Amino acid sequence: MRKPCCDKQDTNKGAWSKQEDQKLIDYIRTHGEGCWRSLPKAAGLHRCGKSCRLRWTNYLRPDIKRGNFAQDEEDLIIKLHALLGNRWSLLAGRLPGRTDNEVKNYWNSHLRKKLISMGIDPNNHRLDHIPRPQLPQRHDISATVTSKHAVSNAKVISADNDRVSDAGSCLEDETSGDSNLNLDLTISVPSLSSALVDEDNNKPQNNVSVVAGAIGSDELPTLLLFR
DNA sequence: AACAAGTTCAACCGCATAACA
DNA sequence: GTGTTATGCGGTTGAACTTGT
Image 1 (cartoon, protein in one colour):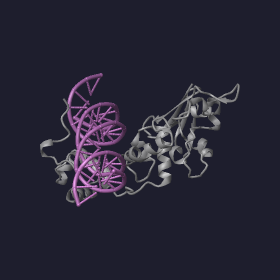
Image 2 (spheres, rainbow, N blue to C red):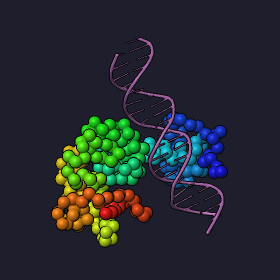
Image 3 (cartoon, rainbow, N blue to C red):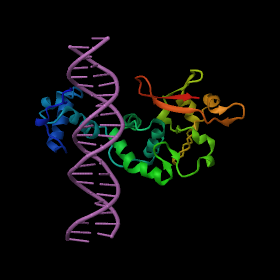
Image 4 (cartoon, rainbow, N blue to C red):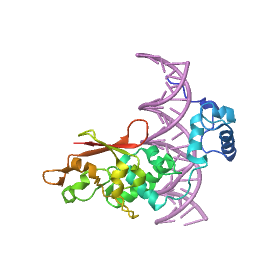
């Protein structure tokens, strides 16, 4: 059996006091982040390392942007969620000053409901209440890629021919610049058009799936296309 | 004013995995 | 190569707060 991360008998739980916050801030200012397991004892805190790390990363870090989400941040979260799903740390990484916990909470308390009220399934970002045949076929491609922020450094890999291209440059044309919520789930990438469009009748293909995720260690989303 | 119901968000828990011995 | 430990992540919880009756 794995040992608990700390001695539970001697640790505080629940809300942090101002004194505890100050101890943590002072310690990290002096010694820097890291070695969370030994930090509580060294800093004189009766908390487990996990709790200290969470308090620091979600609340005390000086670069955290607090307060309401701006409209463009909201749009970006929706678009990134369509692309990456519930990978909150990855989403938060694209929103400077926002934490994964904050993005996750905002999604669950605001954005999910907003999408539902618009008739959009927040799980797959598809229009939920319109019979499928009425939708344009291009909605079958279940990813939203219209933000330069989200994909400027992403790679796109076609499973067909192993072609790798820079999604940022490919997708730049898709960014219209208006701040309206854009839930068009189209990827119209010039270099990928052959993968997404049936060359015989020039119609979008239904059987192309787009899978997004971080592959490797660079934390950048990679798009995989499968027929 | 008092209470119930709904909402928000900080914090916790358990799991996966990276790092290390 | 294997076992152990530390860290990070996503899901969940529950206290505090807000809104409605």
